[in-house]
Length: 470
Ligand code: 5AD
Ligand code: SF4
Image 1 (tube, rainbow, N blue to C red):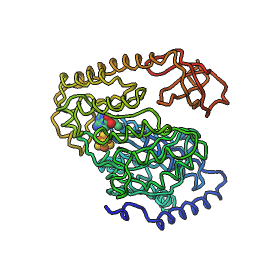
Image 2: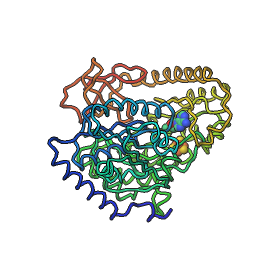
Image 3: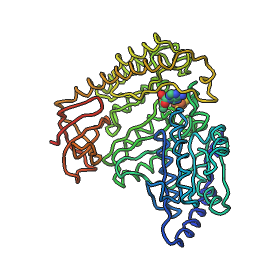
Image 4: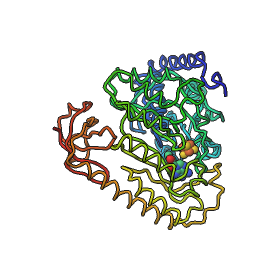
């Protein structure tokens, strides 16, 4: 793929902008402003994509609602990473037959990773007749054009081309909050872990130009955003496709140089590409949050190899040691898959011992879900669901204990926190985040939302910290 093939030409982006303006002119003539509802499943990349979908809808003159009954346009941004997420999205699409019966002009759109799977778009075409528009991950930037086709021709539109992937710069973004922002720095994945559907539905790795990324971060900082997360399936391979003398650590250092009062985080990092240079950059750069999400997936070498992860347990543990030597108070999180095809309970126990050795602050835990088209789906998978569930419960119980210990160690400390919202736990008035990203419940005036404060930690649970402002 040459760079020219990756970047959507400016002329094409301009054509899409024109279409949005034209739709906005038509919408302005309606007796009331039309409303859109965008529902998002899955990861932060999907959240970020939905912010662009909302951005395009806003430019086309739509307002927003969270109520599918009053929405004129509904967009469901689906996830394909596990069957559960796919089924939840489809269940909700099924329920929309009722809203559409009441409002036959309602336009129902599906997009995201699941729509990029051929068997899923086929299923929608055949069995979900009330869906008007299906568009894949590679044509997100053409959403306005596709929506215009539905509006004009009153026919169903399916656009899910297979592609290595593109980059569309300059799409409008309607962000959800005023404090935290996602910035995609790259798209796609080249790793083909044997359980994972992502490389098939999101195309090959491609990096945004550093200048575009830095300009976006500068703009966010100027607008007052204080917590910025750089996004990519594997941020550690940022820049490899650019032919510039710049890797992810260099990009992070450049973000750190941007003047302003903010923290930068990033996800996700692949252990096979997490370099000593990255760790040193994190340690040296004061705006880089002391936090790393470094998914290990499991703790057994045979299973890691079968997963095609390209590192072993010892290498991973060595990375953690080197990182902690540089940043002792780093907050560490990970993803774990239980029940990969062929994993025995004995092998699974290596994951438990790895958790003990690392001591993660928190964990995202999943039971393996076969994904059609991946090598994993064809591997013999003899373990019963009951045994997988039992192992999963052991994993969760262990991590709960570790998280509780980690959190208890905060009690008595005074830390900087960013007050990020009103609390709905019924006990405290505010929520805040430590620099490492841990949740703190505390009391204080609403006007503090958006400010850095110092908090003394007075209590803890498995999930969170409790504190008071000092
Ligand atoms: N089954 C279960 N979990 C999966 N993940 C990715 N694919 C699968 C699958 N087929 C998990 C991995 C990854 C996270 C985003 O989702 O742990 O890191
Ligand atoms: Fe999936 Fe592996 Fe790529 Fe992550 S690195 S998106 S788990 S294939």
